Image (cartoon, rainbow over all chains, first blue to last red; front, side, top):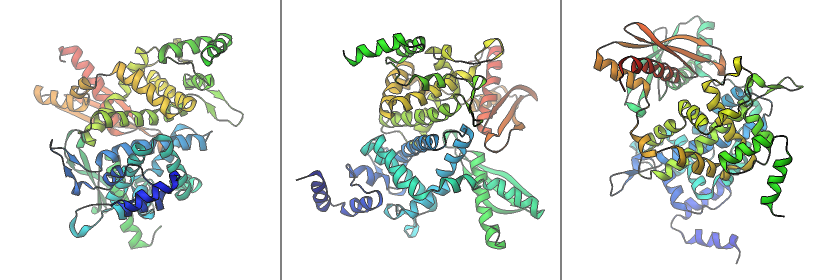
Length: 246
Length: 246
């Protein structure tokens, strides 16, 4: 009996058969340690409380996956663009691993349907999708190691879902876009920090974007820059919807 | 003739003998592709201009090494602190890979002496040390792969130069420290963005920290938060020197 035969039998007998099959369909391999993957999909609203008081959800895996994803993307871009400087590489990477991209990707790949959350009406919120995506990378890394994870990220994610050429020409700096729009339309735009939530390493900023003194969206992030981007993105959605501007 | 014997002979015959030996002394192995390591030590003041107009220095390797170092440290902390949350892990990582730490480490390990720079009086500036350190990690990664690099970072860097327990108790958030001091001493402190240098992905912020309306230090970074930290650190040095406060 070969390895390839044993795996499907184990999968067929497992109570996590559905998850095994879903992951095989998405990435083309059967997970080894299925518990890691189950944890990757466990939103904090479904955290398990351990005896020592700590809570287990996908947040730690998300932290790990974020770092691994960044490293692999850095490596890939380094090799794909041998004559581009580090500023270019940094910007390209931030476009690939941006929150908005990861949320979209999570949905496109069907990862979001596997999320285990306990929210009102079982809603899966936008940011939960990207979080689960990153946590899944963390799970793959712990299960299969760096080189395997690298191959999955490059072959199954970057090559299939990103056009690096297009990304290079694409301006995803929402704040610049809204400022350009405001200058073109002669409508004053302001970014105002309206709140700081939490403290220490959990501190987040809340930024409000005002057009003609009217709030068009609030953003929140660990950095002011990130909160501004988030707010600008929301405002642009409203502006785009209202004016058909693209 | 074994592998272990061939290597020293090749080293002995190489014109880069000194670098081979220095690296063997620091990390315990002989580099494979010595050109990667030479590039890692090449500061941009000694960049080589290629026919296509692009310039080769250690900046791209620094970008890569930074990402690999972050991933390895994330992995190591994830496993060392199984019950700590992602906020804790993020903060611990930022303490290990902070600019100040990497500059110090570079000096402690003798990496800074290998830097090839063309500066006034051949000065090796502080930040060049940390940059070369990160670039070196990038070179090791390209030369030897992830798992080897991971072992070097954990065994030769983290375990030998960091006390995780001490790091956990150490408060390196300079901005918080100066704010606490200002409240204790009832001396008002302000952080003011005084300049923005460059544009696009090269944009940096310059932040001035004022105590009693007098500037105690300017900081510069790609993020406002980073520039504030940098400025706060400089101000604290002055305050510490003046008051003996620790």
